[in-house]
Image (tube, rainbow, N blue to C red; front, side, top):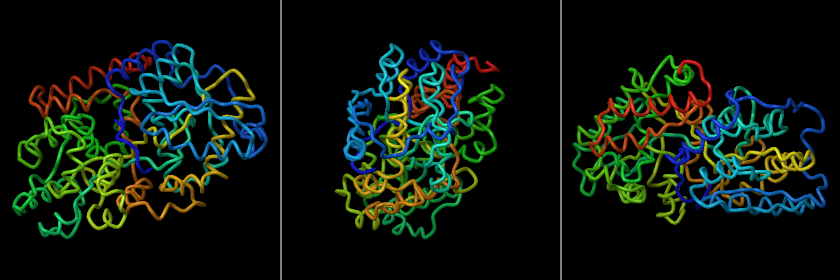
Length: 451
C-alpha cells in the first residue's frame, strides 16, 4: 500500500502482556470454538451486493492504516445500502484493541495482523467468525491463501493486501560502484557482498548494512531470514511443542551470524541508536548498500522519493535471502488482513462476511487502483504504480515460508533482546535465553504441551 506510516509488525511488550491476558481469560485450546458452523452452506457467504438496508456495521482500523478501507467502504455502502462506521483506534493499536475486546467491546470487523500469534488470543476467547470456504479464496494468487489468516487449517482472517516479505532492499548504484553484478544467492554470499562494498571504499558509503537499533523493531529481520529453510522443515512446530528452543543451535546460529555483522564492521557505527527514518534515508541517499527488512521500511524510502516509481526503480531493488538460498520469509500485518468478530447477531455477522466478500470481489479492482497496490487476486492486475521492489517482494510469496509471527504460537520480544545485544547489554546467549523464557510463558498460557 502507498503512504502508510511505519508499523511495528510485531507485538510490542505491552501487547504481549495483553495477548497473555487474553489467553488466560480464554480456554486453554487456542483453536477452540464453542459453536460449529457450516461455512460451506449456501447462505453462509452472502452475495457481495445484496441489500443491507438498515444495517450498520462498525470497523476498527489503526491510525497508520486509517485510509486503507475508506473508499472501498463508501462503494460498499452505495452497492448495498449498509452503513459502515470506520473508527480509528489510537496507538498502540494491538494493545488497545485486545484490551477493548477482552472487556466486551468489539467491532464487527477490524484490520488485524493475520498471523497465528496475533489471532491466538481472540480465538482462545471464541471471538472470531470462521472465514472458511470464502468464495474469493480460490481466486487468490499463488501462495496467497497460505500466507496468512490460517490457524490449524481454519481461516480466521482474509488477506486483502500482499504481505511483506523479509529480505534485502539494496541501493543499485552502490552495488554498481562496488562492481557487484549479481545479487547474493544465500547468507554467506550476502556477507561476502557486504565485504566487497566495504572494501570498495566508495565515497559517501558509510557501511554495507544499516541497522535501526534505536527503533528496535527492525532488528529481528536479519535473524528471521536465516531461519527460512528451518521453518520449511518444521522449526516453529518444534518450538511450539518445546522440542526445540531459541537457545538451541538453529536459532542461536542465526543470532551469532547477526552479531558477526557488527563485529566485522559491516553495520553502521551508530546501529545501537539509529532510528528507522535514518535507515530509510541512508539507503535512499546511498550512505549504505543494504537494509534487511520488510515492505513498510521500503515505504519510508518511497516517501523520500515522493513515491516516484521511476526514480525508485532506478535506484532501489529487492531480493529475498535465506541461509542457503533465496527463500522469502512472509510476515503479514494489519495493512494486509481483516477479521470479523462474533456479535451474537446472526444478521450482522453475515453482513460483516458480506463486506469481506465484496472487498475481495466486486470492490477489489477499485480498491487496488485507489491504493496503488499489489493485487492478491488472479483476476485483478496490480497497479502499474507499484515500484519494482515491491513487485519483486510480492513475487517471493509463492515460494516463501511463514515468519515466527505467522507460525509460532507466541511472539516474544526477540527484537528488543537483539537491540540490547547491539547496544552491548546482552550477549547472544542471553538473547536466546530471554526470548525462550518469554515464549515459554506465552506457550504455558495456551496450555501447549512441552512447557
